[in-house]
Length: 366
Image (tube, one colour):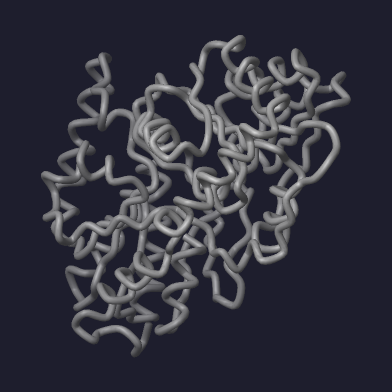
């Protein structure tokens, strides 16, 4: 969302209305933008009933703030916030953009439990009704549209905007030289089984591991730290400032680890930002087989796909990267060749700006 904010700042007054979960306080707000942050700790979307009750308080306060600001455009993410935008649009002429960066698991695989299945159906009905207020759908993976949203909005109103980095943030990046082979997991830590698999595989081939970032669940962060407490080859940075530190973090690693739980249907179709960051930094990326991400990695020759459950396969991939510098250089060359097409954010950003300004409603109040 910070990347979207940077686009809107170029042509409109921009303000952010949000909550900040106490359990997931892991990102820095965008700079030079006013944030109206309400102290409401929303539970996980899996706790549907509890979340609906608590989000009602956010809805009232956010609507009051929107009435005060009178925006021309609302850019939002998550069904809770879309419902707020929809309620505001019932009374005002406003353009609504809805971004989907992750697709709910129960949208792809219907729950077996009758109660959860009923709640999911009610959620889908609510989403269908609320989607009538959406002017443009923004997705970070085209698979999200194909798998779910094609029945809710016309394709010409879908914008695929990859979660690629602002290349200016990497202007100080310097590729790692000599030293011990280091595998980097950079970003919010989750999927503990795959994180432990990384540590064990790295130990087996005598490599270092850098975990940069906090965890979506603090208990999981403490668990992986405890798991590695006796290992001198594993380092944790904790939370970091993306704009100020991301280039330096990538400059400390020889390859990027992005193996998630491919049994999760959302993981199979998502495109994480690590894909784009690794290409920009000309570093090999290791991903899970059976995913849309692995299709792109293999197609462009920018990394290796492994089973998300096979530690030995991961060991072999890491050993190949560690002991074959020419193989790493081949991957770096492939990154350079596909970099322009995959990382060119100008066109997606221009599409967002063009859609936002299409009827010249923006640029006034903001």
